Length: 138
Ligand code: HEM
Image (cartoon, rainbow, N blue to C red):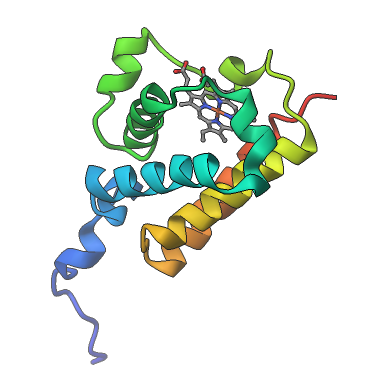
């Protein structure tokens, strides 16, 4: 008889949503804060920064709420928006290959600053880079 394990998976592998895998809202907030801190401080993201309102405090709340719901946590932010499609929201913005790349680069750097586990960060980076590239107009 082969030794097939019927034991319950350890707690770690029972985590199902990306929200749970990243560790909840605190790490998400760390990523978002690192992202906007970089936009505010690093000239390599100047064009992306210039597209945003002078005060990006509301954006920190918005992106935290977005990621929370998008990754499988509370959908409170989406409900408060009365529904939200990230592609529609960006469809009228003059997003170029350059600003989309700045978004992806800043997000990738923010994942490092926020010390997100590298394997998980890599997956987020791949998905979000593709999403941002899909927002380029023309
Ligand atoms: C492709 C490059 C992108 C550019 C240039 C860009 C730019 C912007 C700008 C200018 C705003 C409005 C900010 C303001 O009112 O001050 C915004 C809002 C927002 N963006 Fe992006 N964005 C990009 C990609 C993304 C991606 C990939 C996501 C999500 C994964 C995202 C999530 C959001 C959210 C949640 C908001 C807030 C929406 C709201 O409050 O109505 N963005 N973005």
